[in-house]
Image (cartoon, rainbow, N blue to C red; front, side, top):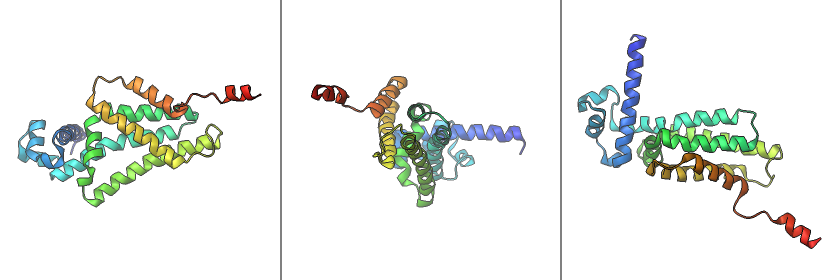
Length: 208
């Protein structure tokens, strides 16, 4: 197949994946049909098999589309020589912006991936584990460099960051006018500084 034809097919298939994501996000895997997806794309139902052999394959491609890019971005962030705070900011920014860029696909990944067969779920699980390990490595590096206290459970910390980002990601999907920059800054501030006012030094001064 000529390169131009290949490129055109890939563009069309990417659009088909985005259309399938919109349908699954709206109706769920079991509520959606191949007819719904075809209608969203603007083609006949029989032509859908040019892109997907089944509704299950469409779900798998949507989930992969939703998670693959931001996993790669996480690896790039972890590989930089930036200090911990800069890497954390880049991580939260990347994670939350992914919900704006690929919001429906990420929602489908989070909500519907359990309907995939074990083999396909395993691939997605491996990608998710790669993301978490890269983030965990950032925390481990922060501890080793003295930026973080050595009592931190780096695995737990990485999972906590992912949990916060996913929770706010769901809100970003529901509220398209939400200011991602503001949400990112508040998440990072909370993760770095916690909830409590730091008054230890003033208490120690009073004791002296």
